[in-house]
Image (cartoon, rainbow, N blue to C red; front, side, top):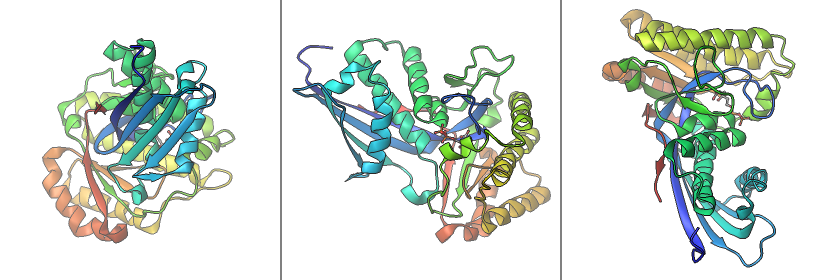
Length: 351
Ligand code: DP6
């Protein structure tokens, strides 16, 4: 760092992602029990600006956090807890007064998981700081590798948000360089059709989830189906990678739906049981399957740890599917609210 530099600003935009093969269960601290793969989204993202200034005394972390213009102590605590774990590697953190402003492109109460976009945005800002203070991340590929590593420590699924397109995280047999510690762009052929995928999110409920993902993962530790689940996830991963290479939208849809329903099946059969699907979630799934049977279109759904249904389809059928959504599904969403998104290219540095 230039010794005269006493203050500065870094700013990143980082997207949400939607998993096709689900990360559910941990095999150690922020180590996934099975590999996962997701689409990085385009429209749903967090913009995070981190202002720093060198303070006279270097002792404690000094962080102020604003979410959508208002100071937010709950998020501040989450961020401060994470940064506290980084102080040994990044002693400069204690020498700074840090003010963070964060905004999401999607409404807070839209039921879209914000931890992937927000924690990856934070990790990207942290890597920019590392480069300013330690000058160690000038190489672009090292930069994003480190950002994915730090994102994972903050929130596992966030590790996949630092790359665009289809992104894997976790060791996969036969896939070189796949790792439990960092995500990477899918290292296998991708048929062009999967580069155009749309994700229409049917917002069945805008309420915040009662169970955090963190608590949900822990329910897998004693789950009676745990080993069978991890075996299934590994084999689904191999089959999905093959379907993606071949442009096989039927197999893609079958596996993607199986993964979503398995996730919810596991939650429902946990001790205690977690039931997040609502009546309208099931109604949407039934309607979607009827529509697919009639029209024979490459359309499928996936679900996060919540009641909202993500409808996935290639751009070539967008007109027809969007008309179906407006005519049949929007009325099943809270206040008829649904979000049109599609596969995106990953984070952008704004400052
Ligand atoms: C259902 O990444 O939110 O969305 O690592 O504890 O922060 P932590 O969990 P998190 O879990 C995401 C679970 C999921 C599936 C997925 O995104 O793969």
